[in-house]
Image (cartoon, rainbow, N blue to C red; front, side, top):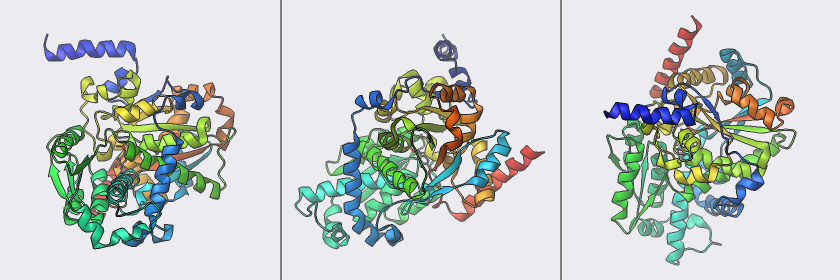
Length: 457
Ligand SMILES: *Cc1c(COP(=O)(O)O)cnc(C)c1O
């Protein structure tokens, strides 16, 4: 049989088992409800990570706060915590309703991780946490540090000289490399970032300016990770932060939920049986949206509903969860090309570690086209004066999809949520943007504007 023919047979089989696969394979937008979604008490019994791990991570970040505040003065206002605002975006909610011709109820918020200090993306949570954990482990092992110490001592040359014997490496589409590079270089580590072909030039330039070694690959993200992992394994002093399989990254992201809980309380936004919370998170390999969702489920349990958002050309987590094959399957196995402008989401194969933990906890996932990301980028800029990078827009149409797509309505009915929707809160997780150079952001904006105008005529 010819290769194409073989693929056709295989894909017919998939479509028979999973009817939604036909639209996924033809890169049309879909919304998928997770049939394995379970009540929290049942789902949590099966996970290898629990609340104690997230609390430990939170405590670790608190220990490092004095150091962070000292070396990254932009974190002074939050006393060394790397945190972002939660804001209401009523104008954008209105624009979305107009754009898609769909009414919504409840209030729409944006979680502004695009503004996170140090590296301007959600990766400032997981990536920085993973490096800090490693630094603490090394320093404690060598009796240079005790848990009760003031960690700002790490600013000095003693620690920088010590860490300079060690390498940290990572494979990245850009933003993870940026986070790990920024904090790694600051602590004194040698840092090597293995960048996939889709990583933006300005991210590579910025990292090199900090003394980070950037290795470029012509292949995609999963390949960059594989190469990085291989090279790191030959050096005993090298620590590889494995985005496809990292408990530390996951825990760093999960802490966001505990912080969000406090923000919601401060803003008097209720989340309980009669006030459901819906969260829409851009998803690449799954660590960031998975970690955040996991933390949110620990806190709000059955009252929070988490949806992952992926590009139509990179629905890695969706096919992984749908087939139950997790990281055993890549979008390329279905003839999907994994080509998208959403560089943080350009992932063909999801993290097996994350898929396993989230398989019963995530409510569903949806895909959207690249052109929509640009249209949303410009619309958000015009309505709320907030500028995100393309990937980070993926969560915004979640609220529309919830009210518009039939499977989502069935989900709401099943979970007796229809009558509660007027009291719902919806959070779109904005995952990046503030580091994008002005002229590049201007190009994005104009691209979106062009598309927007073409739609109107
Ligand atoms: C990395 C990234 C994501 C997704 O995070 P994963 O852990 O890869 O799922 C979303 N948005 C942006 C801007 C990112 O850089």
